Image (tube, one colour):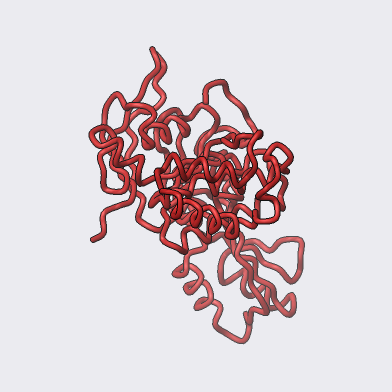
Length: 314
């Protein structure tokens, strides 16, 4: 089996008496998007700093791109790209100059560096603004440049720490498309975000971090099934069919004479079993729709806080 692109076991970190991480275990397969969610102060950024070698863990082990974070930090840094919460763009340089600076830092050499810069300018739709001072860029354009700068070294693993904070919905979706394209090319993405829709749209797997502990992990749909409230909405051609189905399923009829709400976890097996019980002319279903709790519901249930709540430590 291919080893995970990111693997952590028992990561712990404290600042004085405050425990930020309390035994974190993670495994992120290659070529996937992994989202780490949690309230402000849950330990998301500390986790990223440990995995990117800018902060040492007090205990535990971690490997990124096959290299030990503590024992082989240079090898880890050579294999990763990092985009933080705030764009690391030099506003006094042009977009092209920012990218050339990164190419020099990666020691790509003159010819290879110029080729890589030209490639990234085109890929991130920055060619027309390449010669303009970055301070004049819009927020979305600055973020695209920041992402491009993180990819100059062709990383195997890209860490995105709240990459769309402050962007308008259109710019945010543009960044999403860029991230999807990177993963299609084989890059592994580790994402932290405050936008639950972002995690739902992008992530193959999600972990929820609260008070330094992982309280849940799974695919977006698996996490939604942890929370009660999922149901199937069945619509019938006439009230007679609805009443027959309500009696068969032992669920109360609602105010709508043609629509019946049946509790369900949304799994394929549960849907098959439900339809098998209704397989008869007296209970013919005209249409059905599945309704599951969203990630906001999951977040609130697991952390006890709404996504908009702010706490003091990052």
